Structures are given as structure tokens and as C-alpha cells.
Image 1 (cartoon, one colour):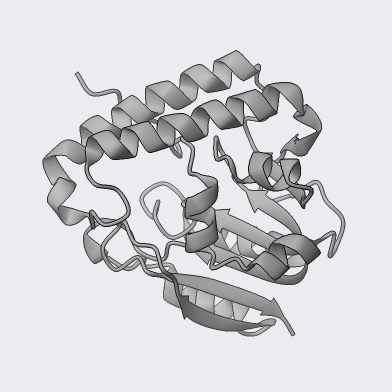
Image 2 (tube, helix red, strand yellow):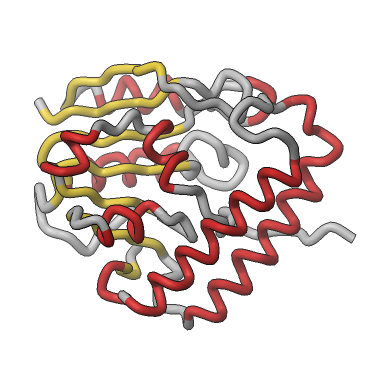
Length: 226
């Protein structure tokens, strides 16, 4: 029986995936501060902070015990793999060789997150993305992976706009969002109205990236403060 997940999936993406998804450069990692929004069980914060970088992760579940989040990540990963099996042809198998490779990769990220979340809780802030608990322009670059523009059936346009406004508020330079497509290369119905709304207050650009799992998902959205 497949586990039904209510709300966004709490799984981990790796440091390497983040570098590719957001086209991050060595210079940026050394000189910029980062906020990872709805970071889940990703290992980006652990790797960057342990390497001397300036980074903070925020998620609605970061008030939970480390073992609770580790268990949730494992449970959601199992459910994700089962749900992908019948539709795996709809995805691009270049970064991941197959479902087993994906599971191994994401399991490792979950473990790395768990260790850092346990040992360095100050790096992980509980927060509602529509009301981020940070000051204006507190971070240079704000990242958001696999939350916006993929859950149209769960998160409405108003939520998207509120989150984009908040991420732009706490960023000093720019916001980067990935991906911009749902499954089967379907563009989110909220991308166009969100683009129109945000272009009134910021400069927007679509940038091709060297990463793709969802077909058509090889672009990120950059929102720069004007």
C-alpha cells in the first residue's frame, strides 16, 4: 500500500543538486550569505556551513525532534519512490541512473541533514514562509527548491505571491526558485501571473541550469531586487 502524503514532501536533496539547480559559483558560496526556504531534509546548509559559508535554513517543521524528522524523511522517501515507479518514464534519468540510485542519493542527504540538525540546531529556524522570521535584506541570496510551482493542487496563487514577496523582502540581492514545471513537462498555471506580479517590483530572468529530473525542468527563476 502506498502512503498518502498530505502537504509538501519532506525529503532531502543533496549539496551537489543545489549547486546545479541554482547554478551556484564558488565565488558566491564564499562571499554571499544564503537562506534556504522550505529546506526540508536537504544537506545544502550542512555542507556550506561546515565549509565556512554563511547559511540559514527555514522550514515549518524545524521545531520537531531530530529523530522525528529523520523518520519522516525516510517515510516520505519510501512513498516517493513507490509513486514514481509507474510514471518513471516521465522523468529524465541523467543525474540519477534509476530509482534505486535516487533512493540511495536522497537517503544519504537525509542522514547528513539529520546529523547537522541534531548537532547544530541554530542553523535551522522554524518559520512560516508567508511570514519569514528574518529582517529585511538579511541574506544576500534566497533559495527555494521544490515548493513553488509544483503543488498547484495544494498551494494557491495567493500563497505563491506571499512567499515570493517575503523571500524578496529578506534578500539583499536576489531570489532563486527551482523548478518551474510540474510532472510531465507541465508548466505551473501560477508562473505567468506570478511573473506579471513580481515584474512590477523586481527584475526577473529565466536561467538555464545543468540539472534536470522533471522533464523540462532545466530552468530556474531569478528575481533580482531593482
